[in-house]
Length: 389
Image (cartoon, rainbow, N blue to C red; front, side, top):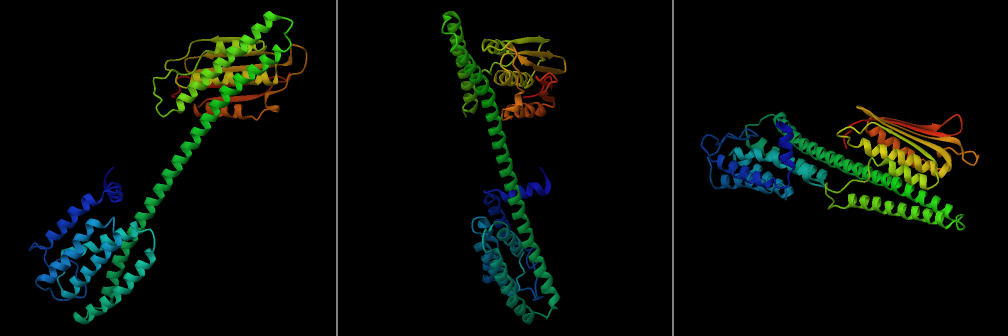
């Protein structure tokens, strides 16, 4: 960062007093140097006067208050203005007069309330000063006083511009922070939906089936064991998700069962869904978020199959290529008992599929989901391999 942006950033720093104090002292000392005497702002054309005790007061009033221009900007401007008036009326014309535009910029950029009142008071106070200088001096034309007023008004405008710039930057940061929070909430809600919906759906289906197995103890025990295993997996996934929300969570935490598609398929089969699973190739290295999104796609699609096409033949095909991962999950149009299967989006909120589409879009992939001609449903996804996390 160089040039004007760097200067503006330093101007906005809360500890700007650390470098305005040296500036105030430098302006004070430079005003007494022989080469800078009577070489400051000259308004009204009064002849130069040698320095005396009042010159010291005028220089001190104009330079030293700059050290507190951020904490007490109005007091700083008041002192500088009095010192400037004394400087011009006495004809000292000191270098310290350059503190006036700095004090004006400070008030315009830092004061929260009554800036318009301050501007009106300063403008009103300038009129008798101009009249007095016009009478005491050689009678310079009024245009000179108008030009000086416009010059200090420009300094005031610079202060307002700085204030607006700072306000816009604060608003931009607030919006970025709000967008980040909203994106994080959306991501967490999506993860919760993926984890809870799948496991709970599987447990409900398994528990429902167990009601009809009381006459077959072995099958009942197997069904209840499947419910227990699914519950444990849900707890594990939820614990991992809560670990991610923990501020003390570190990168060393083991990720969720990304890529363990066969376990996901077996869990669905235990819930009574006939699933044909095919996985070809190996994930690219590094796989990044692509494998995680692949897992979530299969998880959501199988969850929808359990909820809306329970008992229908389901096919899961995953192909790991060098440049992309392709996924296709489809269900037939009828269940094993001959009843018609319902397409996934006809009864659901659609949040799961919408979340999957967002995930895939972020990675630059393609997502499609919709009914098939035979009444089934198919989800097709293409994800670039090695997509960053």
